[in-house]
Length: 85
Image (cartoon, rainbow, N blue to C red; front, side, top):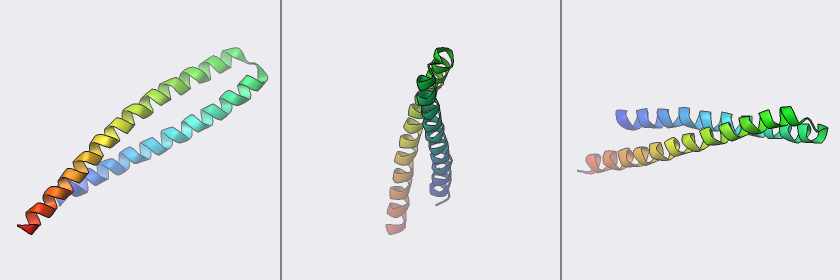
């Protein structure tokens, strides 16, 4: 049970990171649209680079989250099996 709780806690931290990064991407995309409207190419490139980096980080965090989900499921299944024996 302790392992399961630890895994769930780790996954919650990862979920917070995912949500924060998604919000940042949305914020930057809004800025990107505004900058495109204003035709500020230099600032636009900078924002586009930031968005690319955040998308890459988001994919990495999503992979971590998926692995954590698998661990949580496995831990839960082991816990259920050990209590049913």
